[in-house]
Amino acid sequence: MANEDTSQLENHINNELDYYAVLQCKPNSTLEELKQSYRTLIKKFHPDKQSQKGSSGSEELFILIDKAYKTLSDTKLRKEYDARLIENNFNENSLIYAELNKSDLKFVNEVCYFPCRCGQNIEISADVLQEEECLVECSECTNCILIK
Image (cartoon, rainbow, N blue to C red; front, side, top):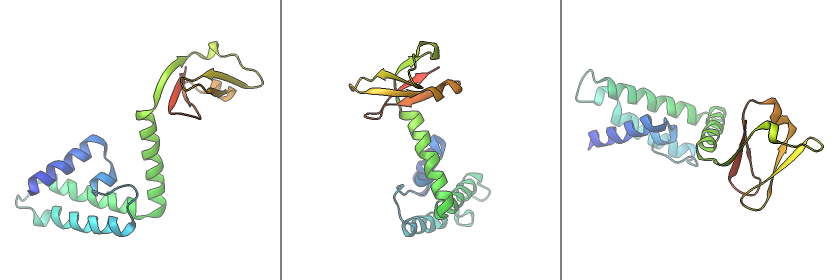
């Protein structure tokens, strides 16, 4: 059973390095829930408790569990971590349905509109011309356009 737990934890780590997954908690977990899970995992994966001495895998897991807890138990660090997690999730899951060249955009009073699939218009600010590439999200749905 311990090898199965270790394997599941290693999969979480290799896939995304999600500290909540490392601690086997949800992003809305309370500090007390994080602490309880941390204590359980630290006991389970402590290098002194492992049957195979010199196993670097369990030591790495132990260090990662500790790092995850230290990050998520500190209010400021947790807010920063959650913000990065949301940003990464947005970047991975955004629905780009159109790609536009900056030269195709016609601005009136520093604003341009592009029709979205949902029926609304996506408002594009002239500020996007400053960036090399940017995603602009529709305010009514999850669709995005990529401006190059």
